[in-house]
Image (cartoon, rainbow, N blue to C red; front, side, top):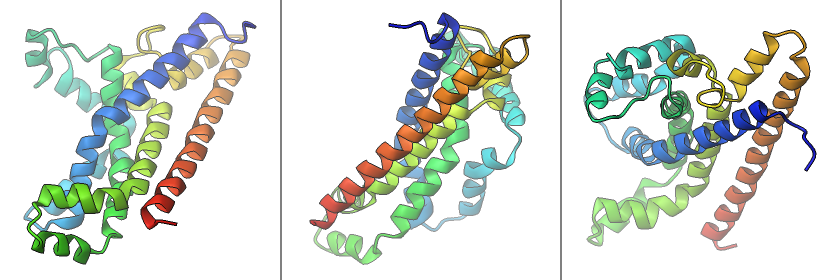
Length: 231
């Protein structure tokens, strides 16, 4: 196979894909739950929760990364206890997963929430009157109808995670082969003389992966929608 990319470039691409996939996989169950709570329930503090969910979209990414460092660093509020059991997130690829998940979470929740709000609540109410539990109503009635929204939210989160830079580089730094993701590698190549070709190749990879994810998402969403509608 032709050596189109250097080992450092391959490692950055592979790490970005791994970080993004793990970020989506780990945050998706919570994203579905939070979206359902915001769409279907009324409670004191709902707007506070909504604000906290969307806060990473408003704050500068560097601030989010710094807050993650204060919280999950080895001396952080949570990180010091995780360190006691051998779990270290700061300056590790697992920390990059956390940073990417936090930054992508608002986009995921918003897409899923809009999908849930589009479902007629009377369908869920009818299932409950037949004796179904809230969980079973969600699994059998709501979930099939919101699958396109879940897929859209997952793809948006994946694309955001692939492009995350500020929070990641603040929380886990830019260590080649360990925490250097695609955006971090592009930035690093642009800082050295003669690094433009490598940076440009990685930019093309980023565009290709993002477009492929969007096309696949559109195809899967339409296929699921057709199956749900029975057409």
